[in-house]
Amino acid sequence: MKWELEKAKEWKYYEHPLGGTIPVSGTAKTYRTGGWRTFRPVRDAEKCTDCLICFIYCPDSAVKVENSKILEVDLTHCKGCGICAYECPKEAIKMVKEEEVG
Amino acid sequence: MAKTSALTGNTACAYAMRQINPDVVAAYPITPQTSIMEEFSAYVAQGVVDTELVRVESEHSSMSACIGASAAGARVLTATSSQGLALMFEMLYIASSLRLPIVMVNVNRALSAPINIHCDHSDSYGARDSGWIQIYSENAQEAYDNLIQAVRLAEDPKVLLPVMVCLDGFIISHGIDRVELLEDRTVREFVGEYKPAYSLLNVDSPITMGAFALPDFYYEFKRMQAEVMKRVEKVADEVAQEYAKFSRRNYSSVGEYRLHDAEVAIVAMGSVCGTARVVVDEMRKEGKKVGLLKVRLYRPFPSQVIREKLSPLKVVGILDRGDTFSNLGGPLFLDVKSSLFELPKPPLLSNFIYGLGGREVSLKDIRSVYEKLFEYLGKGEVKESPIYLGAKE
Image (tube, rainbow over all chains, first blue to last red; front, side, top):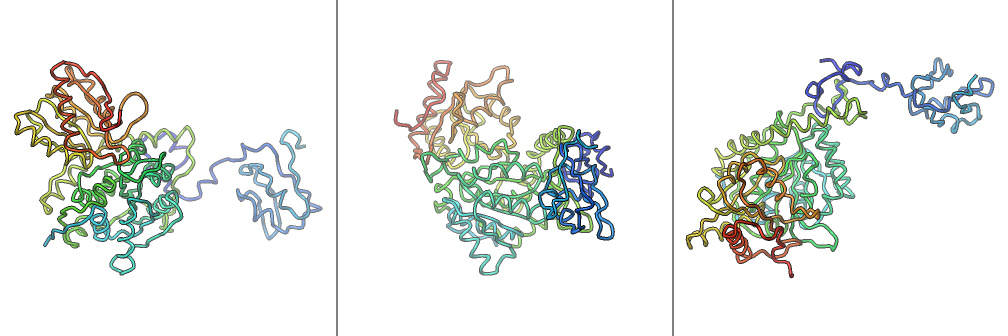
């Protein structure tokens, strides 16, 4: 039986792989940790120098980069931990309460 | 040819470990386990084993390293005692939940406080619900045989669980005993090559072990663990039968001595069974119908066999080298009591706590237990339970 998160949720105990092993890789992608977020990182594009420190530090690989430029934050996975804002040398990222985001 | 030697239990265990030739051993020294690892380290230094020996900074780390190595697909052995086992507590559950067939020798020693280095079973009793298989040894020969069998039991595809082989600190670990040793080739053939179901190092087939499981998943994994335990006793007996073919030594989950026509019997684990056998022989000569039931496989608990064997008896005394401090009696007593509860006319049961912190248990002490059981038989009731045998009171 191929392991898929939504299907495995319905499996009987004896249908699971031994010891709860997940026999596929990259499953963190399907886990929507964005739902945990209280504060959202909001980037000031004028201050940002695309140094990519936030990209390196982000524990959820939620900073999307293309051609060495920051595109956006993947809000499906960003937990709002604020490490990017803390590490940003230009103070270009502010953590804003979700309900206050315009 | 198998050879016979005079060895301590620990030397016999180190010898078995050399013959098993595990891929990884991660251990931390603690009395009375230390000499196992000392001797095994010498084998590593001499290059007679292929083992990667990891010297860690604590038992929490040793079990963690064992878990990592086992998850990578290695055959892993370790050894500990007492506080060391207690320090592993968190990791014990992880090893069994991840279904990693780690084999560990636990040289039984009392838990602090007060600090003590001598034998009782409170250390491994404390881990009885951790999902590990537990096997108790009566003497050095059994420790050697149990350790070799434990590898096969742990790695059996129907089982895949960690196994703890227990032997009594100092009494077995440091006492010199007659041990029949198998040939290296025989042991290697018997344990075979370990083929793990999964390996974290297999980059062609990446996996995740120990992933977060919320209420929608967690329960099924525990249910799976409960289910596998039902298969263990049968596999343990099969492994023992195969081992008996070349060793000519017979093992089963439960052993018995002159029990078939006994009126009263003792149930016990570990080295005290040897003491009880002598008393049984003495009292049988006096015409008293006494017997012994030895529990070798303690986890999972072979309750059905125990129920069958004890049901014809009138009075049974259960010996515990550890207490639960619950006003209910010792762990073995509680397990036997639960197993017999459904009998229409169960024997009278009485608990004897003994030998805590290495307190000597003499033939006279064991005789006093049988005499007490006969007293209960005469009166038709148990006056006092548990009795703290040999305590100054």
